[in-house]
Image: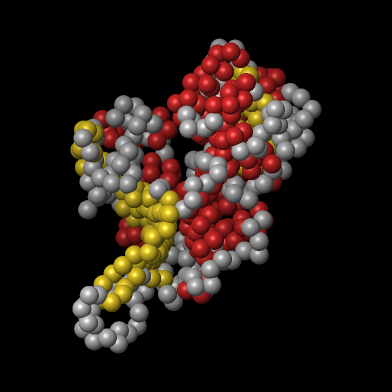
Length: 451
């Protein structure tokens, strides 16, 4: 297990909200020992004490529910070293040493190529690992180039292109529900399933993220990585094992099987929109174009919807709908599996029989199955729902990802060819949207989205 974690961009929002609490959770569960060392680095003119004080305050704010001794241990393990991540001499001074380390690039994606180049020149200790946040590249060409740079730095198995969605408990339950239950796997195909919806709708607006979000938009921020990852887990063939090679091979198969979208497909099977001024709960929300840091000329979408088909024996004829939107009237974060109706109802006219629906709640986590039973009157039907609550995980998603990085398990990270295939899926959409083949609609903040 690696005992030294270097975070470039250590005083940013990612470290404060997720990485520091993730490390404290690992310490609380006994996964980090006294030898562990956290090295924070960025351009701040700080010393160890200032970094430790900042880390303690952020852990109090974002990880206050974690044990005090675990938080104190993470703070005590931390030191700080000022560096420009694009300067190879600076980087070399931060990563110097003989033992392998993990390098976490908690940076804007635009800095990844320069940072990876600097790390290559600095010569990482043998056995080191590198972690990159999404999005991986800005388009297919940049993803291919970044993969080339990484291949010169470390072996593919030492590259962790992380997506915290894959570490969520319910995402794992998608696989276990399919593969560990005989009642579901025989039905998991187009003969029985008409449509799968993968939705991440949230009532949060921009929340000060214009610096990143306005250059990405909903399609790149959510659909290209998070939602396509969920699509892979829903649609993949059963792997031989959950080892990194078997699992990731089957995920790539799904992306390669997605039917390429023509311009006409994009026009009829995608939607894009951005929120206008409105009201969410008890507060007013300005229009997206009026948010601080937004460039209206970019025509960035805050709502993206894409309908895909998979050309495979299992899924021919099933529709897959991926959607994500901001500043909506209600949160809806789930994978919804809609089964086809039964072919015949032998009870006569007893009312409407709705198709079965299986829902995997992502946030909050849970499971629900809509069924039809007999109503209070003879030969009448009534819907009912079976629900299950998931036990809380022992680790938060970023704790799980950090543990995989430190112990060397890349199964939940995204392989290089998988990242490129995901860009191939959305490239026709990006191209058609850039040419305005699909109108950019508007919807009031607090509404259900574009009509």
